[in-house]
Image (cartoon, rainbow, N blue to C red; front, side):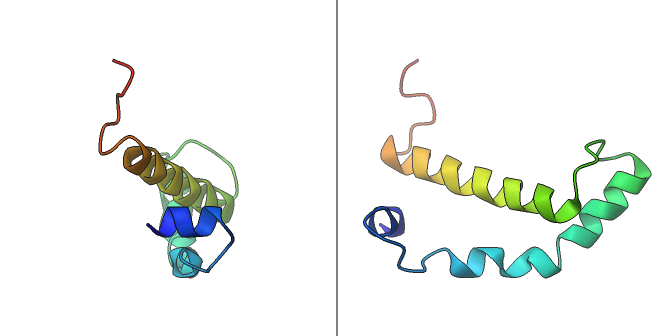
Length: 72
């Protein structure tokens, strides 16, 4: 529902999605320093990509009525 509303115009449904950007970059940076995450991109950018991937995946799931593999 919030995806449809936001496709018609940003209504702020996802505003609080990015609130954690003050918390997540530190664990990402620690994982990078330990070699757990080998991507050297800035931790805030990695977090941003992760959140947007999750939103897109959620939208795909909703658009396909809960089916991640509609073409299989």
